[in-house]
Image (cartoon, rainbow, N blue to C red):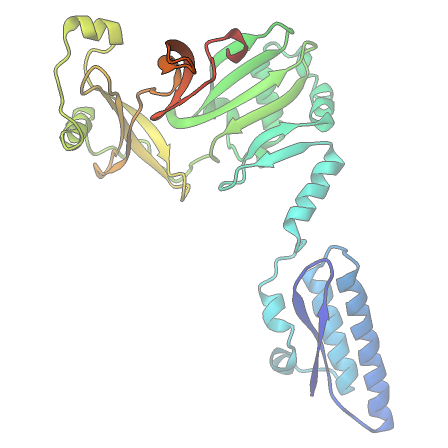
Length: 355
């Protein structure tokens, strides 16, 4: 008994193709020739780069075995003898090279799409195909840019993975630039609860055609219960204050400091927070708290269990600033720099070019 291994140039892995039995009689030689013919057909299919379909491969393999044995194979015999069976069992009835298929489909549609590395939602869409579809849908003639975006999203629900775009996206800002291009930003929500850090921005040219979309969001989080909160907002604030005392001292702010900082007291707002690693959505209390004049902490506390899912200091330390330095003549100079952590770069980011 010999096993033949065929290496596909397109698939990049070895696949067991067929099984030949050594025979010697005339009738058996005829069966062997038929079997080799089926084997050659399978080889041509595997090396052609065409779309591979599970049922077609199974049919070729079965016919090869039938020709080899000279009789109709029993179902149990196929299960035992076919080396392709464990491979085919795990295949889906679709192209094996998914990345290549997606890229080819994008080229045919005229779209250039970059995908989210975790949840496979589009991060950036542009291309002639987007403009053509915008013209076909007559988006420029729809009442408002927001309505035009909703029309486009409804036409492409599978692409965007949103169940009800009009209910899951809320306009937070609109802007027309100096070139008469219009930009509209949406906040993602689910059943009225905003999803933290999840936005979609659509861009229209001066003629009203949609030419680009950039986004960072999640598919509709159907499994979350927005009414499953077991702790109150005040409970969440207390949990954050207790945890923060281990990080830094909490100092009362003066009335003047509160006015300058536009801050009165710790606040808690309900959000949906999505774990960046697992993609799991949690109903949370987002607690914002200032322990002193400088620091501003964010806490994301599970509204059901009270667990602290994430916390960090949201104070903006980095940015343009001034610093003193000594020049080659030993003279101290004040220069414009850009601060990143404890490092100062000789970049004058206060200039208009950086705004």
